[in-house]
Image (cartoon, rainbow, N blue to C red; front, side):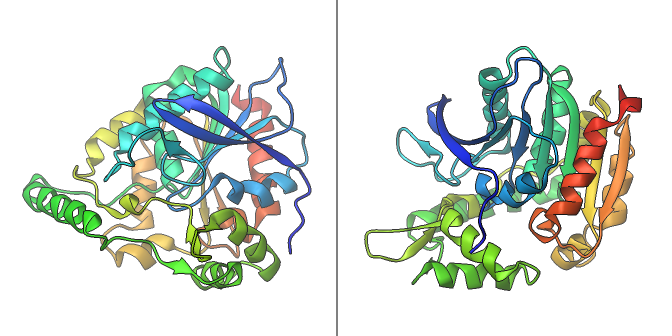
Length: 307
């Protein structure tokens, strides 16, 4: 099994009626704000371990489990759907806790990449440098889709309460590892075995359950508005590095409804943008090429010409 080179510790922070689990590497540095890493949909903060191990510089690193993922739990009943703006408010409160007086270096993957891009437009003063790892956004929508979307949302909430949205349980951590490797064929066996025990935990029946709330599968009631997203991008003042993998995940997911070319066209709205590609990698590029990704991010964060 993979052996972590840099030990993390768990902290629990009260955030908006949640017990927010935050994984922390290194020690606070009064002269430097933390490097903040936020994961994607159906992922956990431990997913960053391989990239953290590959970083050459010692940094104080803070990585939360988003609400409804990992070990972050609500104080009361679990919600039956999740709302994108809540991630913004959660991140805002977390930065108040960990870096109240300093802009942070912020890295987001996939859903987390979408969160950090929008957050940086709403709170530009909070960000020193920003890295978006395959945070593509969503296909463009039209107002005529709204009635159907609201109906779909209501139907899926009902299905959740009938138990029809439950996540699959697995017989063993080995089975979880095989599931991870099926989704990502580049994931090595030793890393899959390690990650399986972070991504899932045993229940009372001895099965291993994914550490993600099934309510995350409920579709958003709101349509994705490209015009609003572009306006958020225009307000970002920090230098931004957009990193994509050599595998074109968008083509696989959306079958032409949303393309990598459209994503790059949207990014033209970002005032200070650099692009990078990680070769021999898929969407989980922090698993596939952690050394290359770590070097790419560290080079960007250290560039003197971006001040």
